[in-house]
Image 1 (cartoon, rainbow, N blue to C red):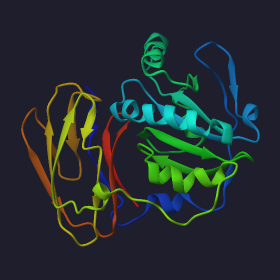
Image 2 (image 1 turned 180 degrees about the vertical axis):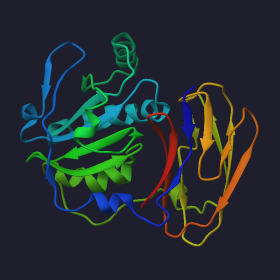
Image 3 (image 1 turned 120 degrees about the vertical axis):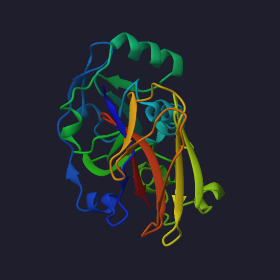
Image 4 (image 1 turned 135 degrees about the vertical axis):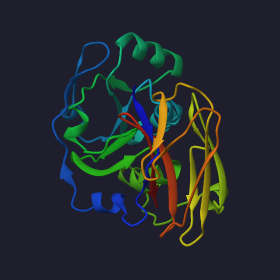
Length: 260
């Protein structure tokens, strides 16, 4: 039986900040797409590439894909190329069916358990690797890539981009998260993220509404508890910094990460 974990991470350490620094060259990618054609990073020289690792069985991945479809359509002429890389276990029939249903307008490569490790050691899904026009890895975005993250980390790399230090945050994300109820259902977490403020106590109540999510149980290791079906479980903590608490799906887990 697979376990799903909700992990409260990054209250003391900004993982994303540690990943930043001198860009490193992207590792070679040599896969096959869903039509059996080779997929290589060298095919995208001069383009900004988003390698999006995902799975049909990952609820947050399914939530993110319609946004990726819109981004590919909007920014294709400015050099954006999205490549979706599946994470096993997957059946190609499921991938093809999902592609048709969501009208995915970018290439899909069939990945292996080793593929993601070429670019990042994270166990999170979805995860997006940002590669610039020179083939350098500029960032790794864990969880769903939100609009402000795209504007800050991807848009400046595209042709015709204007540099700006302003990051827009929606009114909903500005609100303080003191008492929040999070439902865990077949589509993932609802809401998919909340914003936390340093020093403001947060009380999160998780309620699992369905038997099947990314697995059959939800375990919160930091508190030594599971989430039984239809039984609210509340956790409280005080964030040590401001940030967005993103709910994502890992290899065998749900996890939460506080990212600015």
